[in-house]
Length: 380
Image (cartoon, rainbow, N blue to C red; front, side, top):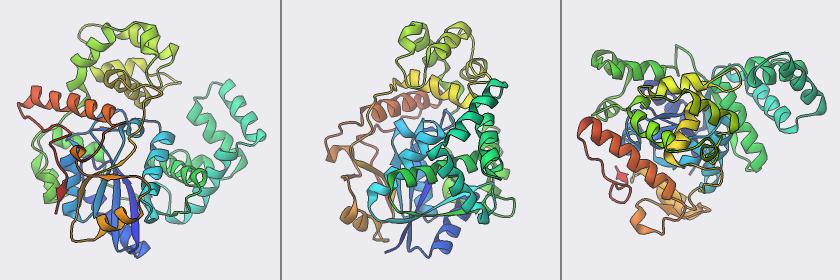
């Protein structure tokens, strides 16, 4: 059985994702597709619009054969950490032959993406000198990195200018570093195919614009939208945690250095929302996405040494596809559907983060979501 891997957030699952799924199977000749998906929080430092089980169920109903959870420590990481965690999770399944990702670049640019990845792994002295020089000129790190890479590898600057391209480079870096031998393919995100802006879709969800959503989401995804959660729904919990912490205590959390901790304590005040706080903490050196991730690290008690689970967590699967049987035969770590079936060491962080998410849903909508021990895997 040939199985293609997809690295996803499905926040929510939309028609662009459906195109990505179908195209990935077509271009690789795969018999099945397995998605590794962020849970209740996503890489840009935001809560997912709906909880992970609903999103995983929608994906399987749309044709994904199994959805594996990306552990929280990776889901709320930088592009590099997110990519490394996602690729390593797919590699641990032991049966993924290919990965197909979306980019802003043309499909024929995959060679340039790989070359850029190699350059950023090797970091020759010439590159490091240029990087330092551009930063001294006042460039932010992302712009300085793109400019330095472009000076050595023509076209690398263009590759490093798109968010999906940057993730693609990080996937290639992870594959090279892990030495796992998984083949990679790219699909260009374009208006003709794989691009509906998930941000725009979430804005339509906020407006309850169901007519527009019906054109952009499969029916199976529409049915998951019983509620929608945003970062500002976490404002009171976050402000309490910050108020009760000193600057020194804030630096215990992942990615929160002395400067960021000082900025957080300086701008945090009564009435400031999560999104306003992230905006004011961000600067030339710290993107708003990083600021949001830092705030969620603080809220969810994520530290630099927080462990990832020792097992692979499945959220949903198609029981007729045979994928789960194949994974169980080849996986390099235990495959778990229900936490009650195993010793959930290393999953405490993910479990508590889910409880926080569930509490926000209950407070806002009066909907009680099951905890991690009672949610159960979706089988189709």
